Image 1 (cartoon, one colour):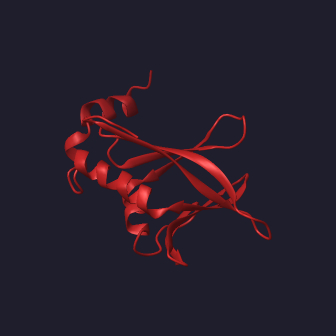
Image 2 (cartoon, rainbow, N blue to C red):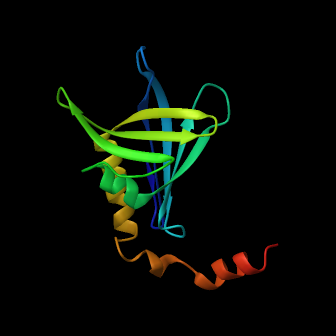
Length: 140
């Protein structure tokens, strides 16, 4: 796990839930940067292919720890069974659907470190609105 004053990253195992089969262990990397304070990037490593990256709202993962949240392509909810606590993340795309079980403790630790960098409700202080507007209005 790496951390600096403006970024946080973590790498840990999770499981891909496969219907009528054993869950498939996967490696995921989570990244957070203060200059994009609302987003968490999660890269899933599947075999030798390039990682598959999804971008989640930080708040979505945070709220998902305590209750079901999300609509459409991403849904998140807590799971507890046999003293194991995890976060379920259901993803849907034109290429298919996937359900992941993410261990709760490393995810909660990662989220906690993101809030140490950018506190909840202070995200706008870390966005350069001039640059964002320039990028929208004057594409290169």
